[in-house]
Image (cartoon, rainbow, N blue to C red; front, side, top):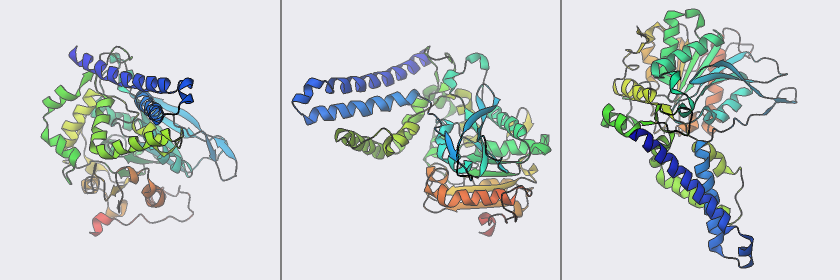
Length: 429
């Protein structure tokens, strides 16, 4: 019961801060106060507006916000989000563009389950939608999943990916972003052994911890310092009575958000101070840069406890993927069995979450894959976010990924001539 009380206390604190912000905004906005202009009241109203929005958005799943799309015919087409596969812990969804010819590139984006919703990849999806049929894994908030739905650990996650790949068929190109990179690699190897005809044509791994020990970071050091007992005691709570998942053991999104914020506390503090000043001067807007970023960044979801704990223990501590010793549903997955799926890794030179070296380790694990089907890229000056959603993605990485897809499309790419795979930097060094 104490775990449930802690969860409800966190939700109470969030709710209280939201209420305090709303109250401050309402009090400072009384019309009578406008008779005697006072900078303190303007600041109080601004603080209230920013505070209310900040704490209110933490429990709201952001909308995809991709409603129309201008195609080659110069016309705006509606974007329809279709659920292709529906499961308790996550769905496979498709961004369909009615009236547009089906694009030859069929891409599955594997979104991370690491505290944020799949909408964190909104800009990634929008950029790929121009040239591809885009599908994505839409993971559900664990607090909204009844206990009767059962457990969900990294083996279940891997089997979900296997089912999604089977549904999409062999002409699929998979792009795994951050956390799911090692498990997507394992899912591909699982298919290589169990159902070779369902394997995707290519697999692009972006900034993922395939071998966390290759280049230690603050994230990997934390995983080493704490024991599993400490993690379970300090991080795991039961969902409170407010949500459908009441009683489910979870790693709360609010705790994860606190961890994210603490890594760059000074920068976030300054960002909110500057926003309050802009609001008080009347220079802010509902969709300015601050609100666009933090509307997404602060929207967090709970993870199933067994998924969080098994990720830390088996991916980071035991390094089962890095040692090629991962077991799924009683079957030992051999990554060396991948012999036909082209694999590319993408890393950011300044990534402080999954540092260069952690993701490229996947290429060494693919012992059955010829070098002609391996590729890698390290983006100079790019941090973690930039390699899949920032200007580094838009300007450099996205074109390289599309070239890699075309080079391994079996003649189904958009170009008439088949392009060579990107240079394998790992093999060249």
